[in-house]
Image (cartoon, rainbow, N blue to C red; front, side):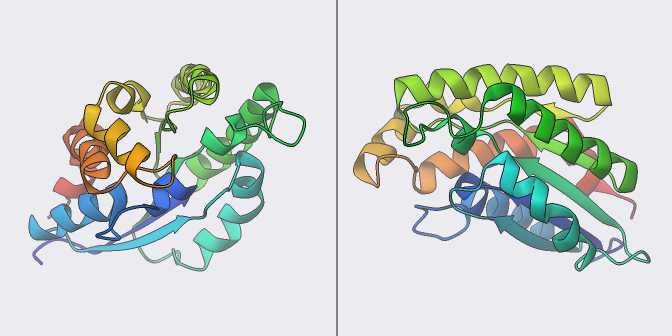
Length: 204
């Protein structure tokens, strides 16, 4: 590696974790592996947890990040959540009400941005029409929030929703998560994203 070390914490749900991927990489692992092959000295902490909502991320992100990003290291944060918020609870309503999700997101992102460089990737679909519609609406609201906070936001739900490979792998798997091709699709979009490219390009 020829660049200065960079520590990255990725927070979110099973889509961050890469659940369902036979290669156990997800989009996070693929993006970080490509950056390392490109010469960037990256330590990647994948802190995605299955079924985590914005409520869960709000409770845990700061303590988990501070244990991994000491003050004397270049540490940065990437967040992606919202799908589990949109999934139905026992009463059929979203597990987290949309307004509450946005309140949680603002609390997370404002504190994160004040502490470390921060990016956000939008939530992903599970091929359930009702949940995906809710998730798409959250993605739009996250985009507005991130614009207001000055945090780069990458919407990815339409990339996944229009992908035959994503739908095929979700159907062949557990009914919610893709496999290698689906995660590779999101990794490619993430790796082409200018804010991420700027992070992994330098400083040399």
